[in-house]
Image 1 (cartoon, protein in one colour):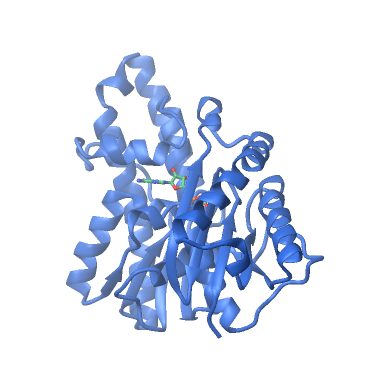
Image 2 (image 1 turned 90 degrees about the vertical axis):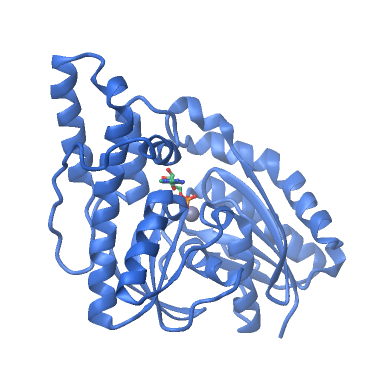
Length: 334
Ligand code: KG4
Ligand code: ZN
């Protein structure tokens, strides 16, 4: 079964809509909310209000971009979770209204599974089973992907997500939110081996990032007491060193899982997979280890509705529909 599906993403601070036709993405409109920058993080109430304001123009633009009328749609999909409840409610209610008015099926998508299915927007596509490291602002997971609809989380963070570690260490340095892309930018001119931060050992395929953030904070407190301009003078080296430390932790667990499970199809997904250091490290090490490495296009790494549309395409084929009485789940699991 194939069809034309409109997908809506509103789990955090991006309002996005996309149209997919028979598994091909025709449009992907993303509106990033600038309002959070001055608060140093996403303010949930402001996110909901901005989604409410943006959703209609974003959906209209996605339909227009795809050359599709509302009445051409075969289904409408929305992000069911995980995410911020107030933000999710905006996309969910909008999708429910459209499904009801057009009398078409409603599809609820798991945001983290959709990040992984971003790999299926472009070619070449990974073969199953493939191992995906999903790294975002709220999650850090190692996932064995057996099919588009069958995924198993084999490890995850026991505290902060790696995106949070990027954002929080950036905030400590006085950088704007989100700090991840800024650390990436400044790290390009720095020495990754200049400063060393402790690499805590966590069993199995799990991760921990809160200790590094604290170590970084303590280190900077000590250094700025001696020299108030320490951060400004060492910005590039600090960014390169913290980025290097975080990438090492991710690569260690990814390599362990790939070896032990004997999987050579390896991907990364989620906002932090936009990090240029992680992308190049994965490509270099993957080549040495004989992996087939998959990295989504930059615009499909951070939150976007094209990945929701891709997941919805597979769910539509499997007739995995929601009742109109459905509601979002901020803690939705696989
Ligand atoms: O997947 P995403 O857009 O939203 C969530 O589902 O959380 O991920 C957002 C996270 C933020 O922590 C942001 O700082 C991080 O992805 N991020 C990056 C880069 N681009 C986005 N982190 C490091 N380097 C980047 N280039
Ligand atoms: Zn995300």
